[in-house]
Length: 242
Image (cartoon, rainbow, N blue to C red; front, top):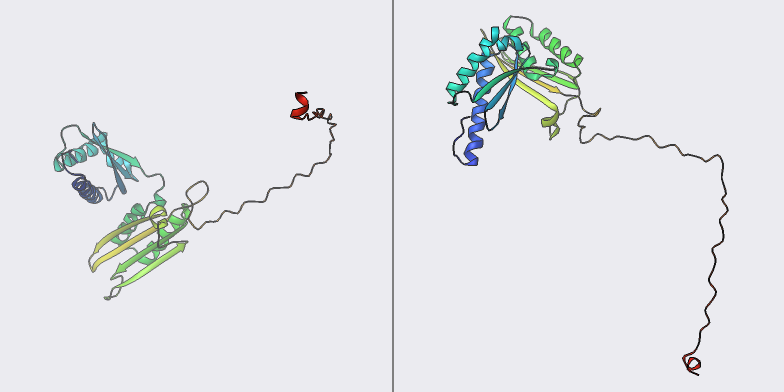
């Protein structure tokens, strides 16, 4: 956001509002391009906005036209000075472990009228095949009948409380506007732990006992005796002056 002389408290609130509005705008604008999140880096010279997506070529557009249009919109909306904001597109390394990408994928499958249960199991299987430790997909709303209900699909290992939920779980929520009403989608993916990565706090690593090394030969080394100084005779003080 454009820099102004404001208090730290107001600055944190303004940065949060800027990020929330920017994220909502990009979610609507780049939904079909596989938008998977945004990162804002503020430097003294400029503000860099990194857009993560599964289809970066569509985000850039023909000869970079789309990314320039987005840059112009962001610059005018948030009142950035000229040439102080830059937008970049970054490809998601593994879209199977990105909750936002999977929620968007499931959303478009439901909009096309495919079966809910089949779609959810397909997303679940794709996530687990890409190396997730566990996943959970919840779809709620008027699925078939007139009465709303909720369907939950779970696979693998999942935690629900504590600091590890922040460290290891990727979470996304999407809304699907259908003719009969609105469906809600929640996707939770538990990322892999251990193997050089950060481990769960209750993970116990049992080390293998070290092998006892038994010496095969015992070598005896002769040590020369240490010379002992001769004892000094004690002389009384009276005898010394005689």
